[in-house]
Length: 374
Image 1 (cartoon, rainbow, N blue to C red):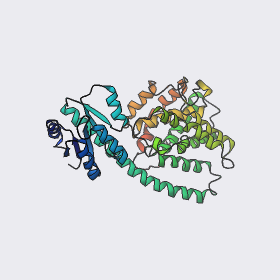
Image 2: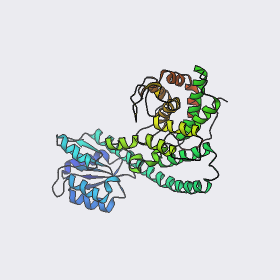
Image 3: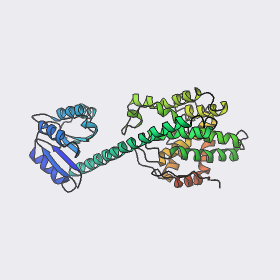
């Protein structure tokens, strides 16, 4: 029992009821007013796992406590569940705007208290683990950046190596992706080969497929320009934040198009197309431009579907990994946007090979790239 819950309520019977519900699983601290709670939080903020906070109290109400926690920045470290008997949505909205993660209506239901307390603990424990991982990976990123500067002259003529290094930089910032770049490259090769064989597409030569696969490593390079506060945000993005996140497509293309003397024009054009259009959808429902049909370059269509597939089967800060079977059917059934009939058919035909690659990689440990056609 290493987790501590602070219960703040002026109603002694209410506190006792909540304490009885949670005492088997948590250490309990009680405060009967907001002012006492603020002192307790200041003193014990490093050990408190969750605060259950009454909205209406004398001597410092729930909003006063939230305001205090915002000033001390503890609101970002300790999840707060609001207790409220109010029936007005504006009260709930105000509490959430001030940083509360959820609320519990009075009269309190025991099961609801248990579930929401547990959920809040798990989410914030995961957040702390991610923050530690970010700190460690940022140190690694700094070392990688120094290494990149030293080796930049050697890798000028190696487009694949340069692409993988830059793709890895994105992974180091976006801690949830794991081996995302490596998997996307392998998935892209499988899809491109299937497309070439299925539709006898003469434009998909071995050299072009190699170029598309190498370029796919850079599909999210524009995320380098997205602030950590947005890129690493554990909760739902605001509309403004989402628009900023979507801009990584254009920013990535602009970055690559501005690079001279490193890659061939064909490779640079392929990279820019993938960056710019891999979130477009065949029915025009994507971004950033909402183009449709085969106006979307083939290389972007190939990367688009495998990028979605990998996102579904991978654990992310805002979701658990979906099973491969469910992920496959979500894409086939159009739940993740519309892809071209040809691309969808290749995805259907490649299912076994894609799942074989997915099984080879682990989100926790780096794995070697495999040849699924071997």
